[in-house]
Image (cartoon, rainbow, N blue to C red):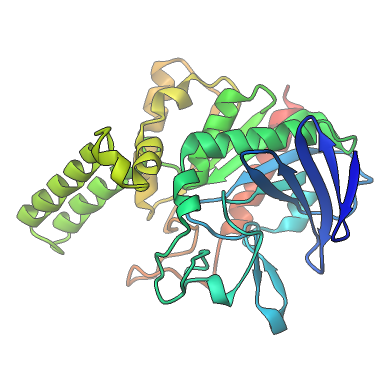
Length: 342
């Protein structure tokens, strides 16, 4: 059954609605999968599908950042891949990004906070949509991404012999679970990844603050205990019903170390030396060695922070000298070498 609505063609595919439309003046094509329980927006960074290429699925970090920002007179700005040298990625791959759950595809200033998150009220920078908070948990991200992979794998312009999945920060946790649950994944990239989970970084941060004399050890102990009590409440089936954060914090705070070491596909891990999320990555080779694993490549970038910006002598990021392009390009070349070595 084919039905035309608002100039977009919706095609029913096994109980899932599908639409495709070019996003004006962005070089992206927007796809939408619709089912009874969810609508999944995703984009491919191209408008011409005459060349058959493998997929490169990028999983963005946390919070409801839209795929596109509408700055009106300044035009539409694509967000998730803006830090990369996209032309380099597109030489080899169809680059795909899935929207954050329950987050509009395109958002203007009237619904953006200072971090470009989608909010209901700009006067309250944390007024996230209740629907997003309910959907913000690991298994949901993984299921949505796997639906997109299944759909795209059936398109004539997608080569099915290679599927690269990469993720940054929270997206690295999603990427790892996709690789663990989807046999189509051939290479995995994890950037600014903490295999011990979200809660771990808060405990590490308290230690660093105490070591630096920013807070006393007594203060660190007190705050740490509060963190533990909050986290404990998320596992309480009664107390956790009163907060939409419980499912998210529990799902993204569980250790993925065992999961990571058990993977057999090639794994690439990159992190900045000044990123607290990456502290534990220093020790990862020990765990791979203990299991006799050699399917990993771990790179620490000196003097870079969480988003691969250089850190100056005052500990502040230099946003004019971002290193994401070279970090991602190095990964892309590694994926090509890993494929050639098969």
